[in-house]
Length: 226
Image (cartoon, rainbow, N blue to C red; front, side):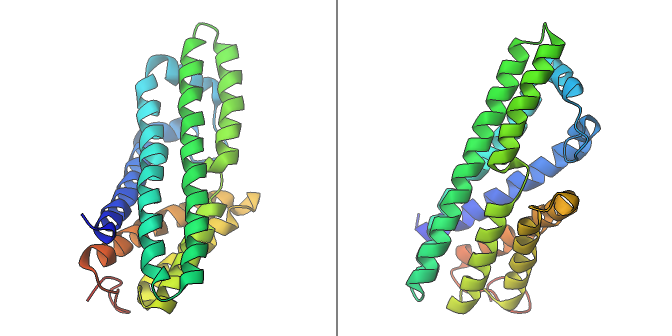
């Protein structure tokens, strides 16, 4: 398998992990406060005591699987962009690997939080306090903002347009998603901007995946290869 093909599959995998994450969030985790600033640590600790596998699966998919797929995509796009714009390829590669590392680290912390909270399930107060502390670390690494991801998607989209890899529509989607990711640094706007980033990233990952799998550049009208 060539690197562009692997990158295309990786991009679609990233989109799938986001879809899985949104689906589980809406159907199972939203009542606990996930996805908002009103998360209930005690309720989460109780949920972990009863169903630890759900959160372990969620964290593993949205963080660990996503990060590994993202690393492949970053390398593929760095190679593709770097053919005509070496400096841009190097910059996007660095930003992307930083993001992948942060995502992987957040996932490892998130799963440790579930495991240790489950061990303390006999003491609900201690379990909730531990989970809340480790969750704060998870959020700091990237689960609570999308600055690194926003910077990478924005940089790749602009570099992709300049290098002829992407068309205007794919670039536009990436620019909106990337800008929204950067806006998550502002607490009052973080929740809404995070949703825009995530939904936009799904579409962008699919468009980029199709470009890499087909081996061409995206058109301005369809956002996929001609």
